[in-house]
Image (cartoon, rainbow, N blue to C red; front, top):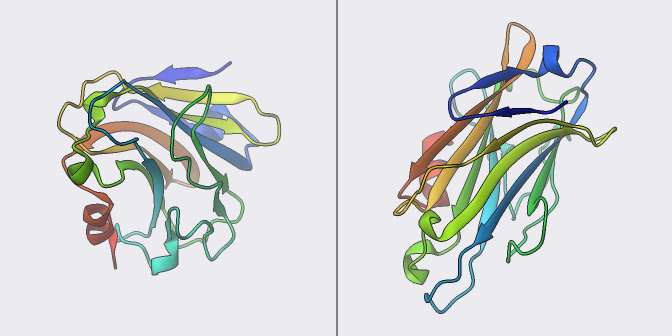
Length: 190
């Protein structure tokens, strides 16, 4: 049975989903009708961090222009430019058994492409969520639905998957930023 969590809450995947090897990370959203004159393009990205809180190499930054990690543990299924339709808008596959042993944390971020130029922000986005499910059984493990109104923010750190004492855990973060993808690249670059 899936566990719905709220901002700041954690779930121990090693205990709540024993035997989980391949996780699907689904991110979804809907866009409110706006008068910005252009369509929204939200992008899911992932930063694979070492003990120092930095990516060990550029290839450990997974996004629409780098869909696979060098260790083969992470695969981004591609960019959805509209967010239309039901269910997940973008999916990132994580094979927990293949993650490089130097990686201790995975940060999931969603940004609005060209938000400033298009005069767009997360206040114009609704029904945002991140969920984790077992890729082999398709069974949902946990889901975090963003409930805050991010009226000026153009990027959201949705959650983090991290290893502690040999166990994988997930924390719902839900922190908004008035920044673009480049800000996160600079924050997590080695």
